[in-house]
Image 1 (cartoon, rainbow, N blue to C red):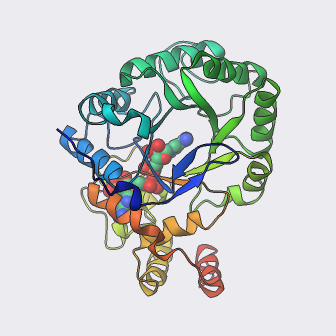
Image 2 (cartoon, rainbow, N blue to C red):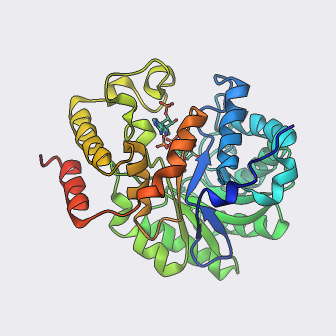
Length: 331
Ligand SMILES: NC(=O)c1ccc[n+]([C@@H]2O[C@H](COP(=O)([O-])OP(=O)(O)OC[C@H]3O[C@@H](n4cnc5c(N)ncnc54)[C@H](OP(=O)(O)O)[C@@H]3O)[C@@H](O)[C@H]2O)c1
């Protein structure tokens, strides 16, 4: 029987998600990796428990997280039944559809047919009546945006999702989607783009547009899959993502040039009395537009370390300039 830490809500802070009633923890946990059939069930349970015990109230999934596709939702459904169902009203659970999920023309992209069917499947796998946030996972240039947004609007009306969001849309695509949904009477709660020290593209215009439109922003991959941590400072450990699950991070991605940057960033983190992972998260969250940093974790210890990122959240002008120079390769 799991009893969550009674002090959990004192361990993390929460930020308002755009102009909405929802507060998200500054660190949220994603189940993209480490919740499929290659991770022991007990490890998954300890990661989820350590997150909730530390005040992380937001778990992020998608239809095709695994491996195999659907398995992360299926496992999460079991963890819900065993540990978290008494706390359903304390949780923000999200899922998505937009990438390939099942064969044939109706299991991918942005049609009403796909989104409606996929959400029904996700709810069954997770043993939930509703999700808190349902996302369109990526823009689909071949489906009229009105069709995709109408599906999101109708999903909110049906009660199967309380809020909706978009992911991986660029600034112009996001603005059109947000306005189209608004014209139907539904507010876009949140955008989920990639954002880290190694990918700053949202800083050009997306963050400004989201702020202007009152839409929250949850930054996925703030540790660049582990590259912005101490993981690879001294080689490629056998239990790291690059070594054991190289679907999206290959050993060859740990280049000499990257290592020079990581080592220099690590020195700045040490001078700030924090780990590189903590500094990378605090840096992402220095951006006021970012509601939450959406991490992954392969061990409970990582969650615990990451939640402490904001113990030093202040960056001096000198530190920010030094980080900019390292990222630009000026050393
Ligand atoms: N919308 C989208 O298209 C999209 C795409 C990708 C991800 N996402 C979401 O974002 C979530 C996070 O993505 P991500 O897992 O790539 O994020 P990430 O936080 O950048 O990377 C997580 C990985 O970094 C390592 N790590 C974490 N904390 C650490 C620490 N303190 N010290 C050392 N290593 C640490 C772990 O790798 P090891 O396995 O090596 O320990 C962990 O699995 C996903 O689960 C998903 O919910 C969304």
